[in-house]
Image (cartoon, rainbow, N blue to C red; front, top):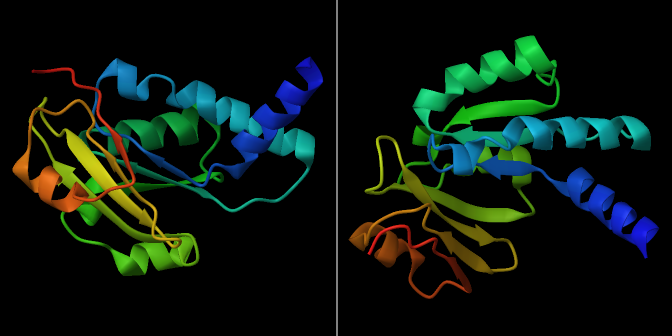
Length: 160
């Protein structure tokens, strides 16, 4: 039923609280502006005041994204952009607690071999579900160690 799909779609968009972008390739970040536009549209329709979305991106994207979302799109009141280096190999508990204290227990970004400023991420939720996302990387011992015993591994396997 199509109206059910639209309702589900809007519910999903309104529930997004974190966007983590692994690297500066189009297949990983080009959809961001359209996603933000859709979220903005459904926030306006729902007439609900929602928390800002935390956007974690590599340092080479931070300035461009900030300028794009604030100057061109006007979404700066919807998001907080964080340099991915603030989550590098460590769980930035202060950062997470200020946004997701009861939802995310740990978020650790890991540099990987793919392109300049490419990262993977391991997220452990408050319910102890652990997700590891490789972000197009080649085999990586640090990611293997941090992602060990994850509940869900998302690996794009771009390289052998």
